[in-house]
Image (cartoon, rainbow, N blue to C red):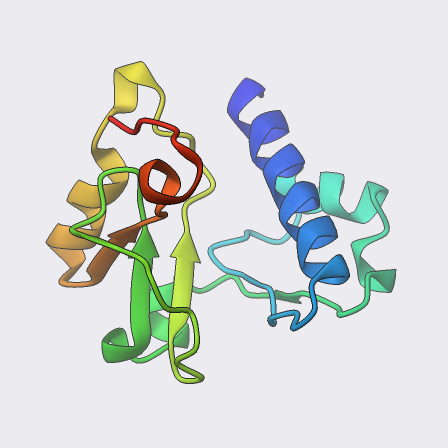
Length: 131
């Protein structure tokens, strides 16, 4: 329940930032089971009326997109993300937070799936230290 609520806050925040962006991207939510608590919470937030409207898929992102296009964004990413201009790139943002108990899980997942991973340039741009 706590992870689901946190994930929903993150999805809503990402949507709001994207909606207000100069160049919004297409939001695709994958691995979302029909009738799940997550889908129910999205419907309570009227996600169907969000513009641009997100796409929902029950399939994992590895089945929805070619692996060569995927870039996993992780606090422990293998390189610093310095360019988001590639129109073919699909950036994967995990819904589960890599908290202290889960440190490194998203990077490990990307490595195991053979997906390139990047971290946001927080230290370089705003002086926030990562892990």
